[in-house]
Image 1 (cartoon, helix red, strand yellow):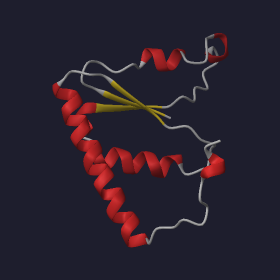
Image 2 (tube, one colour; image 1 turned 30 degrees about the vertical axis):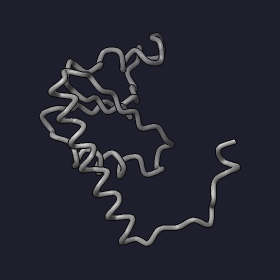
Image 3 (tube, rainbow, N blue to C red; image 1 turned 180 degrees about the vertical axis):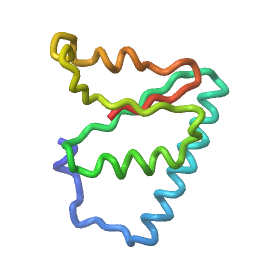
Length: 105
């Protein structure tokens, strides 16, 4: 339903896109400070195929955040016993503390 209403002809000039993106990153940094003050733990999940550009997106998000208030957790686990555990167990182990961000990829 949502994709049917998507206008694929819509475009934004690169200069305007950069301006909009910068404003979003500033808002993200502001939200991080507010969530820290309120002691609300926050999870950001980035999902995608290997080689799809996730790393670039994650790097730009992390540049907007205060490094003292987040941790990056990879969902990929190649340990020999990982297949014996539930899929999300590594995320469970890395849930953020009060006022902290966790970015899961």
